Image 1: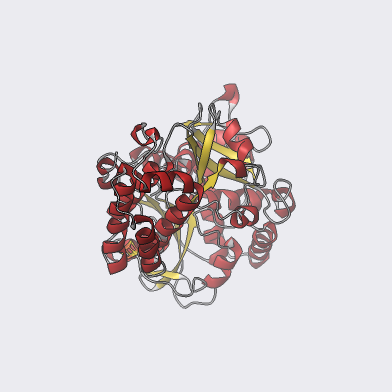
Image 2 (image 1 turned 120 degrees about the vertical axis):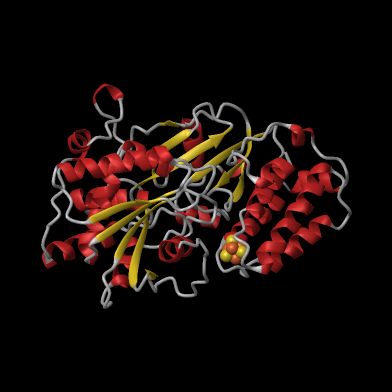
Length: 433
Ligand code: SF4
């Protein structure tokens, strides 16, 4: 997948001499400058960095959008040594931002992890990269080795390789794998209570969040707020795919209209909708694309940034068929712990497949709605909730098409090639292709 940056915001993914990425240490320092992290305990430095991260308004970039500073505060005061976990699992098939960051800016991710570790008093950093993502793992390992040779790191840094999968990158699933070798999500009723690995608290941040921390530690909160809006400061990475001529990862200023983002990725045809936030996100009608890409406005439009994915759907495609493909895939990604997820998601996928084919009974839409209500909020993790969000948005955005399909008059777009991508061999995608 290609990588692009917008002229207004080239913070995380600068290019080196000759327009080429320079992921090595020399290129990193040339692009970003040095970052002094005290080797010994320095309460003044820690307090200044904490303050800077809080004042920057940085929200986690892994999907939940939790304030980064609040996560740091929650770690304080325990008896056991904390661990910093870099979440670069990227379980979302349509996302490429973690992969791009680890490939092009591994030292920025490591800087952020080292800053976070120094602030919370962690002596160890675990970088989690899915077992199928060898290039990203190799890039970050090379960067770690380079820093060791340069005598830059005083902490233990390891690259860990959990099994890839949609749910494995979920925070509780990741710490479960680190603790026991089993990637099983668990219910977290209070997100302000830190997760643990073994007996110690774990600070889990997405790779992009830590890249932002590295920049804020260098340049301060006012610099960080120099882009974006008052409510949504800074820049963020977005993977744009689907009906665009240049699919890839963009670094965009928060608040940029969604229409501008897809246009810059080369939306080369008339769109009927975009999928925002990934496969557990929400469809947005093409008429709503003026909405600023920022948490508040997206929420008001019924969507969210989610994992930073925008998929452009052309008018020649069928939103009902694409939704059916995603739900089949998501049903196959259940970890198999919770009844509503194990049984409810395949049932919704079956209903959507009938709807797609135009051979559904008259009650199919009501049944999908009923099943969505039954699984919502009843999983140990948010996986089923993402499916419910997606399905409900599809029934609204593609309401006219849904009605036609339910009446046995499916559109010709149902036979169009999908604009979505699924991991090779994924169970769901093939069955409703
Ligand atoms: S909700 Fe689904 S994916 Fe999440 S833990 Fe339960 S069975 Fe697994």
